[in-house]
Image 1 (tube, rainbow, N blue to C red):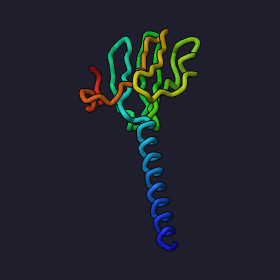
Image 2 (image 1 turned 135 degrees about the vertical axis):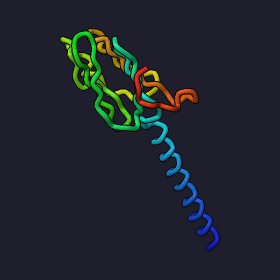
Image 3 (image 1 turned 180 degrees about the vertical axis):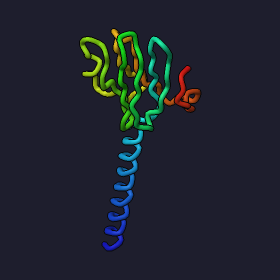
Length: 125
């Protein structure tokens, strides 16, 4: 009888550790920061890592657009466009997600973690 309890406790401990490992892997996979945000404007294309929180001012034909990167997500905080509908879009963090400010010609795109895109140097193309 004593051996059964030890086996049950051991099995329960192994199951709990497996569940914790799955939760940790799921959080890491689902979290942002797995790539970078590419910001295209009428002037240039910029790339910024999602791992570093920052505010970026991008110039467009109508004025400035403020892009915020925080907690692995990117969004447009403010723009010079008349309707400001781009500021109501939820933050993006998954590959191929995008937010566009059409009047000010600014496009945010999340680029995934492919082998050729691992290195980001935070400079304009």
